[in-house]
Amino acid sequence: MNGTRINADNADLFKSASSAFIRVLFSPVNIGPLVVLRVAFGLLMFASMVRFMARGWVTELYVLPQFHFTYAAFGWIRPLPPSGMWLIFIILAVLGLTIAAGFLTRFSLIGFFLLFTYVELIDKSYYLNHYYFVSLFSFLLIFLPLGAAWSVDGRLGWVPQRQTVPVWMVWLARAQLGLVYFFAGVAKINADWLLAAQPLTIWLHARTGTPFLGVLFDQPWFPYFMSWAGMLFDLTIPFWLSWRKTRLVAYLAVIVFHGLTGLLFNIGMFPWIMIACTLVFFDWQIEVNEVVESRWERPSPWLRTLLTLFFLVQLLLPLRHWLYPGNVNWTEEGFRFAWRVMLVEKTGQVTFFVRDPASGAEWLVLPSDYLTLQQEKQMSFQPDMIVQFAHFLAEQHSQPVEVRAEAYVSWNGRPSRLLLDPTVNLAAEPFSQVPKNYILPN
Image 1 (cartoon, helix red, strand yellow):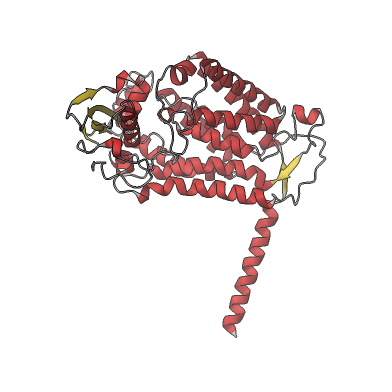
Image 2 (cartoon, rainbow, N blue to C red):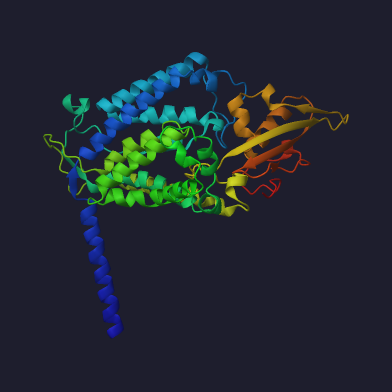
C-alpha cells in the first residue's frame, strides 16, 4: 500500500510540474524580442548580400567555375546563367530590407529561405557554419509572427497587430541560437583544442603584429587561455543569456568574444550575425494596440510535428561523427552541419592519375585545370570532394577509365601525410554515407 501511495504521489508531482511548465510555456510575453530580432536579422542579411556582390563573389563563385561540388541528393541543383545569379542576390538584398521593415514578412522570409538555401546548395566548397545557420534560422522565423508589431504589414492592416506572444515563440529562436553555441563548445572538448591549443597557436603566432594585442600572441600560455575560454564560453553562454541577472554581462561577453574573433580571424559575417541575433535574449518591451489574445495559443499539430523534427535533426546531426571510425577532424566524415567551428587548420595537395585499363596508358591531371583556387583548396583535404572530382574526371572520357588520387594533408601543425589510399580507383567508389575504408588513419 505504501508503495502504491508513493507511486501515486510521484505521478501527481510529475503532473503538477508538467502543468506548471505548460502554463509558463504558453503564458504571454511582450513581442519586443521578436521585433528586434526581425529588424536586426533583416538589416544584417541586406548588408551581407551587398557585401557579397560588392566583392565580386557572385561571379567568382557561381559564374566562373566550370564544375561545382554538389551535395548528396542535390546533384540536380545548378547555378543559373550570370544574370540569373546576380538577380538572385539582388532579390535577397531586397528581401533583407522587407524583412527588417515587416513588409510581406512571411512571404519575404519564405523567399529568402528558399533563395539563400538554393545558393548554398550549389557548391559545398563554400560551406560555412553561418551560411548553414542563416538557412536554418530563416526557415524557423517563417513560423513566428515577426510582422505583427512595428511593421508595414501591421500598419496596412494585412496582419492583426499584437503586443504579446506566447513564451514558446520567443524561446524557439533562443533555442536555435543555444544549439549553435552548445555544440560548438562540445566540439572543442578534444585534445588538440584543450591540450595542444591548436589551431589557435598557429593562428595567433601569425598575428603577432596586431596592435596592442600582438605582444600577447607570442606568449606560450595565451593560446591555451583562449582555447579554454572559447570552449567555456560556447558551452555556457546560452545559459548566462537566458538568466535575467547575468544577461547584460553575458551579452557584453558576446560582443567582446565575437568582436575579437571577427577582427583576428577571417570568418566572414559569423561574429556579427551572432551579436545581432542574440539580442532576442533580452526582454524588449514595445507598445502596440493588441488585437490577438495569445495566452493559450498553441501551435497546430502539423507545426508541432515539423518543429519537433526540425530540432531533433539538429540534435542528432552534430553527433553522427561517432558512427564513423577515426578522428572526424581528419576524416571529415560527419564534419559539416555539426557546428565544428574553428577547430582545424588544414592544408592539402592532391594530384590525380587517370588510367585507361584497355591500353594501360596513364597520365597526370592537375585540379587547377578545372577548379578555382577556392575549390581546389577545399577539395584537397576533404575525401568526399576528392571522390566527387574523380567521378567528374572519369566522366570526361568516352571509355571507362580509372582515377586514383595522391592526397597529402597536414592539419593542426602535424606533418603532411597521405589522406587516401593511392591504389584505390576512386571513380568506382559510390557516393554514400557509410564509412570509407579508403581513408587512411591519421
